[in-house]
Length: 230
Image (cartoon, rainbow, N blue to C red):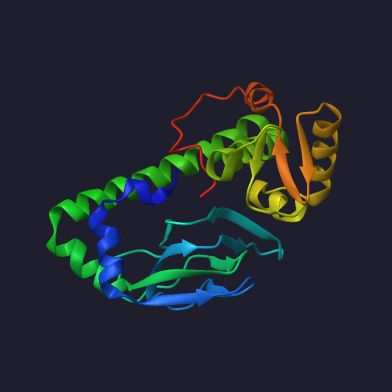
């Protein structure tokens, strides 16, 4: 399930009507924090990491977007505005592009679109609150374990061995998603491998016992559309 499912088909049609496609390669930036915000993106393929750089130079990953996700990292109806984060490609891919001005015009003239946009942003708020809950109540373990659960819900593929996470991430990239260090992730993964909770095959994670992770952080079984990494 993806973020785009919370938006009406009409939003998708707006992108298609614009008919502007942006190709990107792994490592490219769709945009960078603090630059002028002019465009939003609907991913057709590839994976894109949304992140911020904190004052001490560390990178904090906010989410990972995939096919059919819409990337909007700015405020609407505020005049000139800047991107609030960075968008970096983790894989080669392509995206449909729409201007900020066009989106504002369409939302202003269509009450149903405006309502749908409010619902979409509300879902984002619920996702953020869910992530904060796991970090505050369960610390580093909550951050790492809940990230694995969210990766499973967003990019998981069921196999005979368990749930294969189809996006390839380094331990550092996972640490950035958890707001912790690579060393912490290394230690936790080592412990989980010894317990046969997860394994790594060809640089991809396989989760063998998702229920163990949920139990360890008192999972509240949030709706699947909230417990996502995107």
